[in-house]
Image 1 (cartoon, one colour):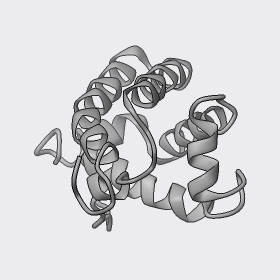
Image 2 (spheres, rainbow, N blue to C red):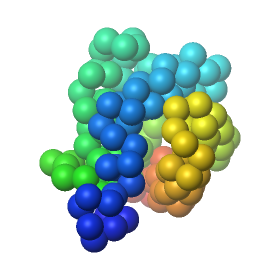
Image 3 (tube, helix red, strand yellow):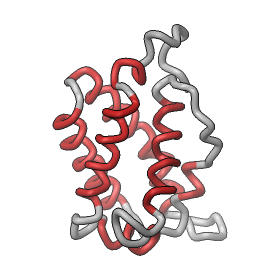
Length: 138
């Protein structure tokens, strides 16, 4: 999904690669310290910032690059990747709260609001998958 047909005027071009990267790393540094979210992420990815985090962060950067209108090699399926994590509505609500705080600290208000809106929309699908059992049933 791209937000603009002009590659010079994408949300990604306004945010920039380095600021996106810093925002994502700052966000997940908070996530792993959170009492509710930390155990889910650390249990799945390992100790932060080592373990599986460098690979996970590259995948997230690719995902957000694609969403924000930049070229990306991302080919994942975010919904199924969240299946069977043991996360529920409380986890997703907290995730969005921390995401909003991080965005507001690292981005200008228009970009922060747009990324929060995008994440809020994604939440529906991600949460639906997270509540499924690995066999695909709720």
